[in-house]
Length: 124
Image 1 (cartoon, rainbow, N blue to C red):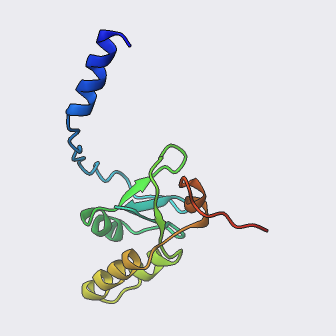
Image 2: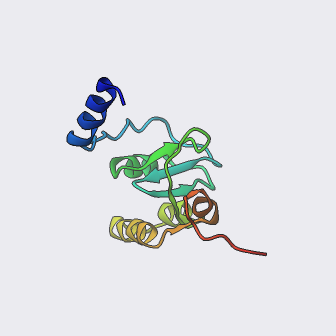
């Protein structure tokens, strides 16, 4: 081994990598039907048009539209009818409870499990 290689190796071993705190991107426009929105590790399909009022409420709580083609993060799948449930909620308290229910009950999809290294595979 050469001396610069040893120095690089020791330097990498001795330095601590600090996690980067990322800011939430700006909310952007109201998502179209057929797109996806996400908060933290939960993604939900947008099945119907979202009203501006509902989108502003979701955006204020940290939901953002995502582009699955270029996004490499792994998400748990929320209920497909989640947006409709939130849209027809009768009060803000019910809307907040529904949102928490959606986030708590999201499950890792088969597609996401297949992407994880070492994930168990189903044998047909």
